[in-house]
Length: 152
Image (cartoon, rainbow, N blue to C red; front, side):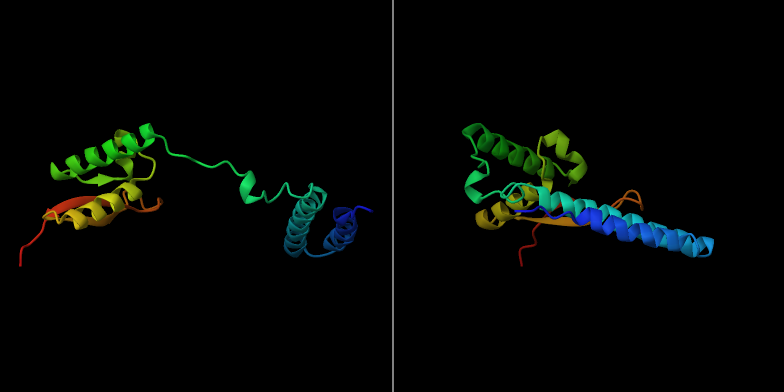
C-alpha cells in the first residue's frame, strides 16, 4: 500500500500562496504569511498522524495501566482529610494554597469528602466556600471554612 504524502502536496500549494503574498501590501501580505505558517504546521501534524503506526494513537482499554490504591494510600488520604477537618474546626480558612501542608493534590476532592461526612454524620457544621482571587491576572480558587449550624 502506498503512503500518502499530505504535507508535500499542501506545502507546494502554500508556496504559491507565499509568492502571491509578496505582491500584497505589507500588512495584508504578513497576515497571509501567518495563515500559510498555520497551514504548514497543521499539514505536518496531519502527516504525523497518517505515518503513525495503527493502534499507537489510541491504546485499547486493556493496555492502559490501572491504578490500584494500596492500604498506605487509603490511610494517607484518611489522615489528610482528618487533619484538614481539624484545621477547619480550629477556625482556619483552607484553600488550594494549603494543599502542600496537608500533602494532598486535589483539595476540592478532600472538601467534597468532608462535606459528605458532615451530612452523613449529622455534624452541627456547615462547610462554606468563597472565591478568592489574590491576583487579578490569576484564576480564582475557593477558600473553605466552617460555621456552626443554626438549629431551627
